[in-house]
Amino acid sequence: MADTMNRREALSAIGRYALGAMAAGNLGGAVSAAPESRCAPFISGPLWWFDPYESTRWGESGWRDELDQHRGIGFDLLWILNSQTALDQSGDSLKTILDLCARRKVQVILDTGTAPGIYYENFSPQLQLEACGKHIKRIAEQFAGHPAFYAWYIPHEIYMVWGKEVPQWQKLFGGLVELCKKAADLPVTVSPFFILDRTKVFGDFRFNEPDEYRDFWAKMIRKTGIDVIMLQDSGEHFSYVTNEQRRPMLRAMRDACRESGARFWGNVETAEFECPSIEEYVRRYGRVHHSTVKNAPWRQVPIERLKGKLELAAEYAERIVTWGYREFCRPDLSPAAKKWYDDYRAYYASRWSCRESR
Image 1: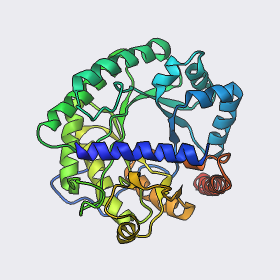
Image 2: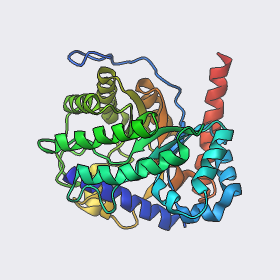
Image 3: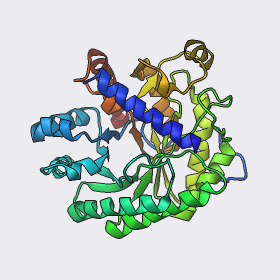
Image 4: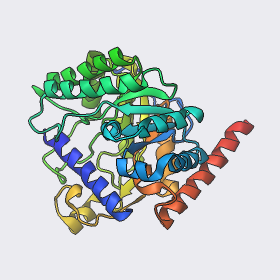
């Protein structure tokens, strides 16, 4: 499972860097080159890694301020990961967050947790189901019926698997969907990714063609009952990735969702590894995974580039979420983050006023 392993290592490294730095269609036929727009090119809300120490330090007033900043740029959803630590923390920080969100009509997605350790090492669906089942039960006991609790999130990430791993992942995803539905009958989401590295620069990954990707996910959704796919728009996170490279993968997943009855959302990342080309990456760092690069040049996605990513996602998705805002784009983090926030706020305000005047 080298694909999952390196991806997870990369996300872990990104998180450490951020904290340190900032203490349809017809599947057999052609798909239209210009699909009908599904949603406005705006972000509904961010993936939020819950930090119990940060939350304690903030208290209710700090969370109120944070959510007010979210509202200032049109966010109406909060997607929380690491909720296990919130339940283990003394006090009611997670309830405080959900109550504040309910007052603001902000929808909250809560994760199903994972077994202790790294889930892809000695991968055991049964072990994951047992551990996640306990966490799901705890979440439901406290928040089933809460007006802000909108959906579940399965945090086990893959792009594709093959061979004997396919039924293992079907068992895990299908089992988690069943546990969630029994505990609190809400939509169940996942956020897979795709890779674009055909020459194994970043590791011994098996590249998947768009048609293969579409067929895999259509079958996975049908087998498991997943309700919402929130597709990450850049598996390698690089600034050189183009919309022309992204489009076939977004279209493939959109088509998989159409065939299988799931809803398709875009996860348009607001942070990226700055590098002009894959050739320049190899020249600078060698043929190594980017999670191993020290002092990696992560940045906020520039607004003009972000606009294009959002417009692309809006062609296919019915809603857009993001990874990267919490770690890189909050206005209190740095002057660069403040500029990004102000630029996005201006973009949101101008586009929204145009929509309202139609």
